[in-house]
Length: 471
Image (tube, rainbow, N blue to C red):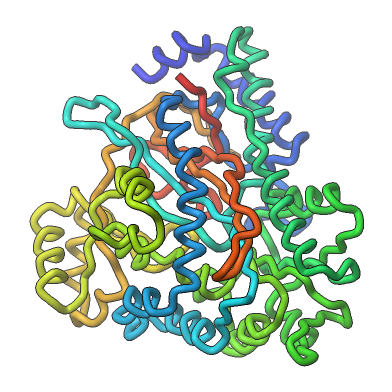
């Protein structure tokens, strides 16, 4: 059935799919849709997994997600400057989750209302369908406020799909593939933050892993910053590098004797990214006047527990007016705390009775951390104490429609199958508690996974890059 639908729409069949995949992989490598991989030498690059053709996506809901992003930018930014709200949201989590507690301690020790912070966000959505399989809207999966990836490659995937459609002799698709300036817009956000620091001799610091697998995506953004303004110098450092090179002179941050204007984190969202001494480095950076992307407050604003609290009745209205709150609430799904109280016990009971209706999520980024279906029951049954469950939330499962496509993986034969698409919308915002310098929609990303996979993280090995074919 899936193959029939791809043949009807795009003219793909068993005879041409293999040669088409080889052409597409070559184009991907030529254009830099590539990454390092742990099983090859460090100099090697392989294609990032991608979908062979663009996936059908309703224009109505694509436009809706784009429209909402500036509002979400503002809410997350406002939350980061609201210590009472963050404490209320995370009070239970920080009791049991050391990682979140460490970020929170840094936030408490350094927050200043006048300090500018830069947000490069990505809000992720799934299409939702009713019991009859009819698409009923989009629902938000999560907010990403640190190291939001693939903005550097998403526009090139659109080029890849244009190349494939041309090979297939397709016509009239140009208005179906929406323009995407995510690389430019994210780079512009960093550049404008550098301008706001107001020292043309200061640099932009990319904090990165010692060996970065998703290197081409990061470099695309780095090179776009330099293209935007030739005066900007960028330095890439790992936490290990920064232990011996980062110093404060009063509150000014210096790395290797270079003053730092903007600190952009592409690492630091998982416990494994920190050795004990790295927390001191993170605190040192946070104490500085350099503009952080994200600040500790913005990182906490992106946690699942904050997302849960924002979905509760009356909470959004603390940050935006009633009409905007109503628009945002339409894309939220039910979310439940697992605290040691009546509400938490009720959520556990629901999950044990109908685990297929929920997803269990920790306060983590990076993919591969969630529990689904019967695994939720096993997790709850094996949890040693009610305390342990506080670092998780329960979210209603989104019933996504299935779409035919072919995910191209290195070393695997092409196979047409049903996939599920996750739409990411990028946003940029710069400001402090009193004033917003800019707040923009900043492009989009589509990632897709096989229908039998629970996760969509590409770096975690679950999905592939895609682009929307608007209908």
